[in-house]
Image (cartoon, rainbow, N blue to C red; front, side, top):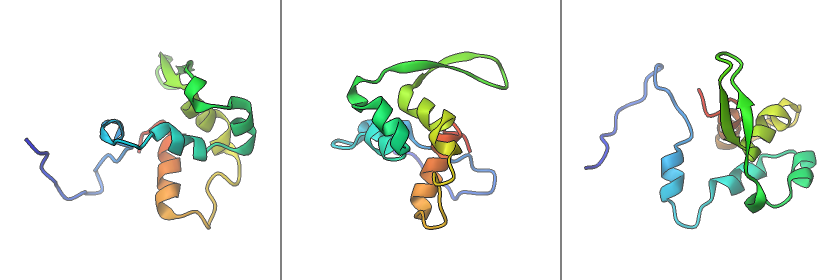
Length: 106
């Protein structure tokens, strides 16, 4: 059964749909995430295929979760740099990078 489309409202919780990425042949979310890395992290992390997960402590709950090392680098380093999102960034890239920086939360 196909999902029913509904018009977004101001209360719609947008996010990166990880299930959609899993269903796409020939597309790898991690490749797109790697493109958002700063030069320093890109050099430090190397090949995305070899990266695993790291522990992430939720600031609000104190809960420890396993997160992808790429997402961790985006959240703790890259997104804090002035050129992570610029006035010249395409809107789609800016929104995607915002979700990455916020842990895929609106």
